[in-house]
Length: 382
Ligand SMILES: NC(=O)c1ccc[n+]([C@@H]2O[C@H](COP(=O)([O-])OP(=O)(O)OC[C@H]3O[C@@H](n4cnc5c(N)ncnc54)[C@H](O)[C@@H]3O)[C@@H](O)[C@H]2O)c1
Ligand SMILES: [Fe+2]
Image 1: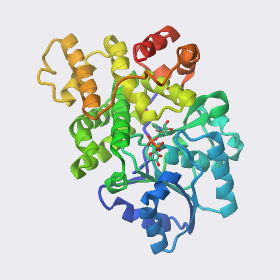
Image 2: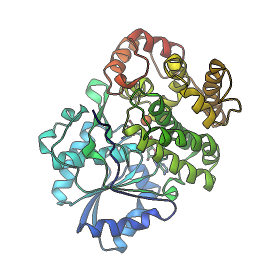
Image 3: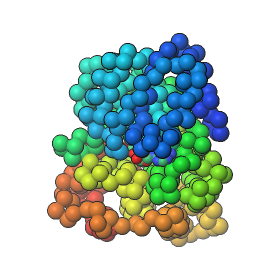
Image 4: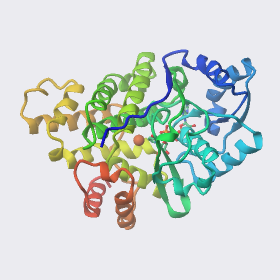
């Protein structure tokens, strides 16, 4: 089977990228849009940076803010209603993964109303029609939802998050502007940045990885290693580097898949509402350790991307240790404690392991895993 690669039609990068939004919207003959952005972003004036541009260009919009972190089925369904009531002709998504994923789901349902239940979008789905015109502006440097062919929705009743994989959901245009990320507090910068690193590492070692995805993921690892500490300190150069890194990782992983880390992280998000980046980070060194014998020479490249001196020629097992140690060191340096001590309950472990096995990312892990493996990893972190 040939390899498939799906990306945005157009993307803008760097300071001032958002200034292109009005042209892109008007150029497509669109007069009114639904703006999807969560309440925190509206409150802190992040959303306004874009809505001011819409107003200046005479583009009508209505704000939709019923979006919570780990967005729910209800967040999507009420957004579909808002889109129809307003008679919008497209969506501008401003936010982290939660705002962008909600917008993707809304836009897919408007174009494919047979999926109004939302749940039927879970897994790999071949919808008939492309999402409605969708313009995505990330405000975190992490998920890369502005370029990925997937979105993640929470089903609170069943305490689960489900991944929806659909080439039709990729936003038409992405505006990756580090200024939109500059208001992130330290902790959010750290967790979302480590989410980007997790994407790049899982995307690099997944069995589906190939020549087109490898350079994207590897460069992303290198940029995270170089820039995340400085981004967490609020430095402009670090923000710029992380904005590129998260997008590179998004292009890479979206086209090859993730693995065990994300399978467990999604389940923990559904169970306890643990922020996605936090779950990914805490799991990453343990999952790398679990996968180490199923990755050929790839940990050499990861160690090299972190600047480990003998990465190329050193003893492979030692280099693998060094790659994992670099990830732990980075997490420590940016203030993340690698522990779920107060987050997970022993009595939930069976159900969590079952959820991880069913997750859409499970099949892409280089090493097959069992429920017992998931429980062992989590017990090691509790
Ligand atoms: N679609 C994908 O490919 C993909 C990939 C990974 C994760 N996800 C999903 O994305 C979601 C997580 O997204 P996220 O980590 O970007 O966080 P988020 O969108 O959930 O945002 C978390 C919090 O940060 C705040 N915030 C965001 N940007 C800010 C800024 N610039 N300044 C100040 N506050 C800001 C928000 O208001 C919110 O309260 C999860 O549901 C996860 O499953 C999707
Ligand atoms: Fe992620």
